[in-house]
Length: 544
Ligand code: TEU
Image (cartoon, rainbow, N blue to C red; front, side, top):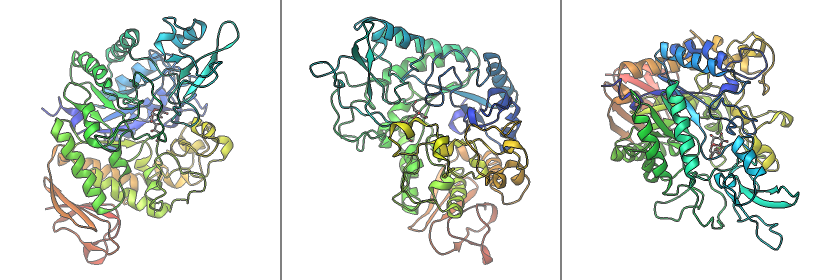
């Protein structure tokens, strides 16, 4: 029954609420804006939306610092707006996935405010990870861990008597204190939060930093540079803050809650864990339903690398009976239309660094179109990030004073951060803020090139990126590609080619054009050369 197993082949579209559509003209997108644009998602042809956080928050990390898990930030609307958005989505057969941030709260969460006011050793402090400092006055942090955003992962607090006191752990920003998941109160609270949103009708949760909740009990020093991808090989020691075995028990508890609701409600792990054999431990049948495939996102643009990552991903997920997932972009990484236009060796996932070369925009877009057409032909579930259907590039020339991502400050301005992939979406070329909202306001400035990418400039235009996505999604559904089986035809150095059902797919990575498979070309990421040859950096779908 495909309806029951919807997630195994779903195309899920990530909405980044502050940048999708602004209904009230304050320059920040909101829930009524999303609801008003749901028909776009229907026209595009996706199955579900995942919304990044819209909960009350000081916005120290664009909402990934949650102050109240059961409400909506006034920036984005009200709980009634959330209910209306969910209802309107369901009316259109779109499922709704919300973001859950369990590794840390905001420092403005009631629990953390209580913890600061309470004494060392109190039950209030035991919900977080407070420790005494090292050295004579406790002036040194408890260990050498670094924040993912740069700088020490510990901040010292001032006690009630006005003296410098204990330190608290934050793997991310200072405004994101890590919760203590050994505390039963923390566990109960999140079971309740799950029920709160399930009762409101959501179809699932994307679990932020799913590999970080449990820390090695001794909080041992970690000399290696802080790596996001937490383990290079299955048998190597893992960093004491990532991918600890204890996390799995938490997700088993959550799965039991979800399974108590009608239909299939899903858990999706955001876990930067390598290799894929360790990642799939999160998607065992009694844990999460899916995990983002970041190894795929990071794979090099060569035939051997793409063949390798696709086969490894399919094999590893098949072994645990979970759907394979595919993703090329999200709100944390350089948009793939730019990433694929960077010289090999300078493709950092999170932000184009100071002094890095600028991407080749034409090359990047050409490869992005080829990559997307390859991805959407694969069996499993695929994630799209808002704006990629317009071919949006990274905004690489944001003025420094406009930057909002905490990584910019925390890294001492050595990393530009992730703002460049978060710029508000252009809907109409000739409207204020390119149709993002009713006014010119936009929380990050939109570049003038946004006019040419606007949806209304591409809609109905043959060969546009928007129409390429629509065609691919329509055919993917019509041919059941998401539940198909992949049969390799060619895995050489220049070409990757396979069959999925009645379609033959070929991507040409080589410098010379190659013959297309025989049959009717139903989709192509670039026009074919004379004689029906597939040019370099292009993908074709052929019906035979
Ligand atoms: O990201 C988790 C995470 O590890 C990111 O910092 C990511 O690896 C990094 O941006 C490199 O690309 C999640 C959210 O997706 C991110 O937006 C949040 O900042 C982070 O958690 C903290 O909640």
